[in-house]
Length: 103
Image (cartoon, rainbow, N blue to C red; front, side, top):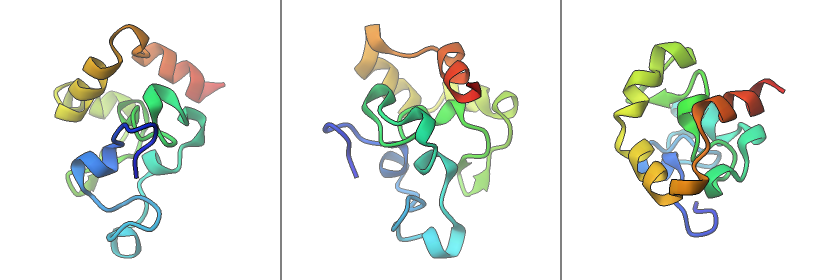
């Protein structure tokens, strides 16, 4: 599902772990798809375009753990690069995203 014509992480990665996705029943829903505090960030549905700031996302078939454990991998991710490029001047820094999540 797209928001404002922008692709969310679960569509980009094609994991099927969004609500109603093909892998929801077998593998569960990824927290990025349900994290409402980041809804609308970078044009997302929930955390779908700020997944790198969310602990416990399900990438590459496994839980990615805490923010500190996963951020290096996320910064190298093609999806992170896409969102960064698409949002340029309006791109929210990791500090801004963490601030939203900890309010």
